[in-house]
Length: 113
Image (cartoon, rainbow, N blue to C red; front, side, top):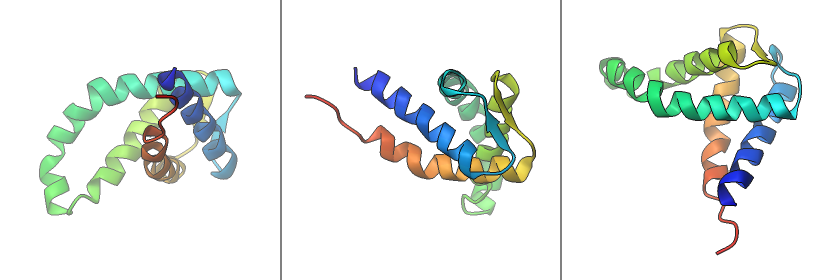
C-alpha cells in the first residue's frame, strides 16, 4: 500500500513540476504515472552505469556534475514517456533539480504501520 501511495505522490509531483516549469508538458495523471514507472526503471538500470562512468567528473566538480546527469536522465525519461515532453536542457535541469529535492521527502513518508 505504501508503494502505491508513494507512486501516486511522485506522479503528482511530476504534474506540479510540469505546471511550474515552462518547457515541461504532461497530458494528464496517467501519463505522470507512466513517467514515474519509467523513472524507476531508469534509476534501477541506467543511473548506476552513468554514475560509475561519470565518477571522475563528479569527483573533480565535487558532485556538481550529478546535477547534469540528473537533467540528462530526466530528458531520457521524457523521450520514452508518452504524454510527457521537455523542450530543452534547462527545462529538464530545473525539473530534475526540483524532483531531486522533493522525491526524497516523498520517499520518507510512512503510511500505516
